[in-house]
Image (cartoon, rainbow, N blue to C red; front, side, top):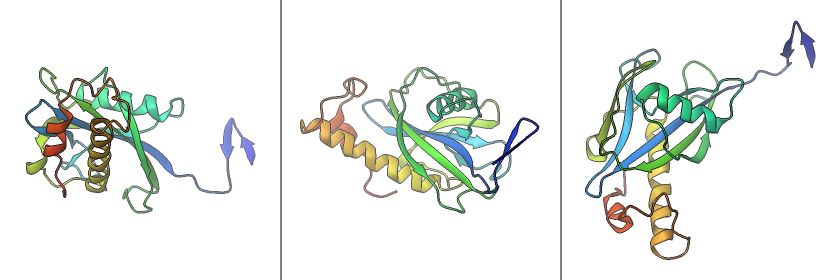
Length: 181
């Protein structure tokens, strides 16, 4: 490694890192997901999860919260890390790894709108999803599987009930999670 003009120079290329956030909205009757309409390329005009590139001075936990607020206005939501997605061709701009997060919230009274580089933001029913940009369809399937597993484990006493899920009817939630998307 050489240091040149205050910069680190590596002989190996480095991938970019992004965060994406799958926010599930559950009001006791319906299960929805929060999507943003991309305001820029690639996939301009397509729907995707709130997210973006990590700043050099922040953790992925900080980056996902920042991007969620910047693009949708949503703040003070507990998000849990889902998994990293690293398919080589997942982003046409170049080698990009995303660390995805998910959350379950009650969307009643939540005002969402498109800010920053998001042209729009809104809740979508899982039965009426638009085509998703990047590999976000795959990320959604993984997040739904994790949500179903979390509900199952808590309902059956295998896992202690998470206080962030205590307000939700987990039995009803389980019924609303589709087997396939």
